[in-house]
Structure formats: structure tokens, C-alpha cells
Length: 386
Image 1: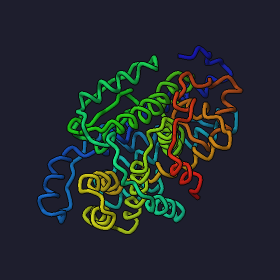
Image 2: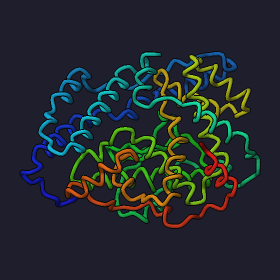
Image 3: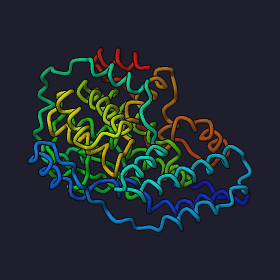
């Protein structure tokens, strides 16, 4: 942990930062958004030949939303003297307030969807055009590394071996109640792997570079900062963090056309929420029009329809577009790894560093050091995105 002292000059800032830190511990969206009965509902959906709209169950909420809102907005932000830093914390409070509303309305249909829109937005015409552009490219080349051959126990061993390059320790948990093959829970420093999933070698490479090389790196960099806001997350950090994670896949040479097209399908799927598609409607679009196999179509449909309409997934493609362009223009990636931060707050991060209230990244994503990508199609596509 950093030894930067909370001097009397900044005591009000550290008090507010500490107060907010205590409040946000219960509002990790990923703890609540993943259904508890995925496998049962998937089986029912397939048995009815895709005509049944799944009825998902979700974890119980462990906080009082009204009290949390009140405590967030009771912070005396006027005591923070620096205008830019004060604005950051004001933005942070509004961001967390929106996440509380998201969690409180999970499984309440369009009510949740509209709260998700406030927190994560929805694809623009440009995003949809980018997705459709990517989907024009062929991804049919056979690659043995794409065959699902590895169990979750094999995956655990692979992650442990990969993680030897970093000197931080994290927990590994197996679960049947997640929609992704793997995810990082920031507040408990835990990697969760889907228990019944079969992994390909390429997917293991993707997930290690994505989840450990970026998400866990920024988790532990955030924990090393004097201010907890770096660990808990700046506003709109999802777009930048997922962009960094996919950029790590690209730089390490494991980003494939199939993977990039998957991100494009997510944009298309999120856009169906805006058109009021049902679960089976979105699945039908992916499975019958875009010819995705039923398991892949179900997984993407689940990701976007969980909770009542979760729009976060369109941010992966927008994020890699922004981070790729930033890096190619010579942008310094180190500040973006200092925690759960976003590109739009780069100047504020620099201000905090100049004031001695933030430190450079302790850990660095090693895939960024050398470009191992050899796929010229990927370069052409990423350069061509709007």
C-alpha cells in the first residue's frame, strides 16, 4: 500500500473518500445480475424449440437502497478545495447512485432496462455500423486452438501458471451461476470460472490476458492507491476497462475474428433491447439470421436480457475502438491501469498525481510491451472503425 500521508491539507478529501469506500462495498452489480437458475432455464428454452421466455431468479439484495442514496448525497463535497477533484467525486456519487437503482430494479423488466441505460448507455448508429462492418468478415478458417477441450480444472491450472508473472494473489471460485466463462469480482479480488464450461486453448489465452492481464492488474493497482476511488471505480470506467482488456487480447496475439465478431454480436443483441425484443426474439435473430449455434446465441442473449435488459455489453467494442486509437496515437497506457479508471478522467488522474494523491501503476499489463498480433485483417478492421 502507498505510504502517502493523508495530511491535514487533504484530510477532508480522505474522509470523504473513506466514507464512499464503505458505502460502495455492497453494490457490486455482478454480484446481483447473474441468474441463479441459468442451466435449468436453458434446458427448458431448448426443449420448447426456443419459444419459451426464460424466467430467471436472482440473488437477494443485501442493502437498503434509500439509506445508501441518502448517505452518498450527505457527503460534504464543498470541503474538497480543488475544483477538478471535487467534480470527480460529484460524478462518482451520481455514478454509484445509478448503480444502486440498477440493482434495486433487477428483474423488473423495462424499469431495470431504463436504469441500465442511465448507467451504461445503448449502441449509437456508429456502434451498430461498426458491428455490422465487422460481421462482413469471414471467420470460418479452422483452428485447432478453438476446439473446446479443457475442463474448468485445466483452466484453473492454466490461470495459476499464467499469473506467476505477477506477484499479487487472488481467489479462484467455481460457479454455475454466471453467464460468462470467467469474470473478476473487483471488491473481493476473486476470479470466478464457470464450472460446467469447456474451454478452448485460445479461450484460455484470451481470458488470462483479459481477466488477469487487465482486470486483476487494475484491481491490485487500484488497491495500491492512497485514494479508494481508484479501486471502487471512476465514472464510465467499464468502457475503458473492457477496451484495455480486449486490447490486451489483441497485443498478445490471441484476439481472433471469431472473438471480435462475438463483440459485434453483443452490440447487435443490445440494440434489440431498444426495439423491445423478447428473449426468444433476440435469440432467433442471432441463431436463425446470423447463424450462430444455439449455445453461443443463448449465451449472448442471456447476457443482454438478464435483469430485464442489461446494456453493458455494447461497451466492449466501443472500448477497444477507443483504446486502440489512443494507443496507436502514442497515448500512455500506464495512467489507464492505475485502477478502475476511464479515458475521460486522464487530466484528473494527472492532477491527483501532481498533488501527490495518486501513484503510477504498480503492475503493468505485459502484453502491451510487444505487439504479437500477426492478423492483418484485425489491424485493417480496428483501423477502419468509425
